Length: 437
Image (cartoon, rainbow, N blue to C red; front, side, top):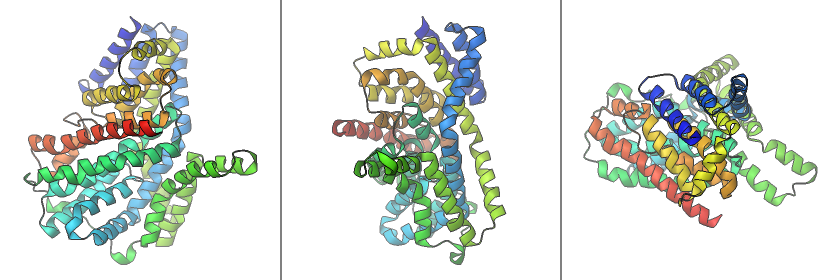
């Protein structure tokens, strides 16, 4: 009976968000309270479960996600993203223009949140389209596949960062594994798949062509790359150094402190404030205003993550998590596939990759301890599933359709299929890694 209540709660969540157009955070709160009461949590303690879930979830994440948003804002406003794109275009040349855009999207997509990266990079795509007289969808899909993969797979993006926390995974190791899985997913869903899209007619508006900063106002090449990728470099170092230096003693404690993801992001944003901000002529006031705007941009994402944490805690406190774990443990399906499948189903129903990943985590979490599955790989599996088949209930679908001026049919056979390929190749990559680690 309790498992049926959980299923009804998930259905209610889907209906509130899709049919009722209720804000996702409010929907999570309502469903958490109703589900908790129906599962037998007393009136006087159900709110305690909700508060605990919100606090435990946001506590370790708020610093990472907020600082990541600030860094992304600075990378965009300083011109570092434009400099990286220019270097990539020059290095690859016209013949390999798709690969240039794909690599650019991957590098820029690590510090930039998806919506920011999309709005920033689409005008660049259109600039290339008009300059070289190439089909817009054929050129654009590789870069957008890169942005999508970094959004779903790699910290410090909100969903994978939250999943790392929920599954008690290692941030640095998840990032390393995520890059290994991301590369084939991007190549297959990007340049290889895009070959089939040459015949799609798209007439993007010329007004969306990028308004670039003059070259003399851009930060240097080395500065742009190192400042943008510093969190990735430091996270990788924090993963590798403990393998070389013993964990005991002062050195081990220091590595542990500076290897914390929050400290890494704080160091990165502090350095970037000087290298991409003050050093390039930006005033401190302008930099800080940009940081404030960045926090406004991701405030709702933080609340959605908090709401998902509340629902997860209700499942745990009611005891239904153990029942779900027992039921799922008997299924003849690998836990990594099961996590991917649950996230994929919720994604298709809801449209939001973030909500899909975090809701799936609350369901699959109790199975983790029993199955002894690698938590880093579970983060990637759920992340891949959360990108499955974007369609008309996903904001990204409409962004792509309207910016590229496409029909629903052409959007489905380009954007939606690209997202599906990313999800499937991601799962295959995770399963192959599971055989090796």
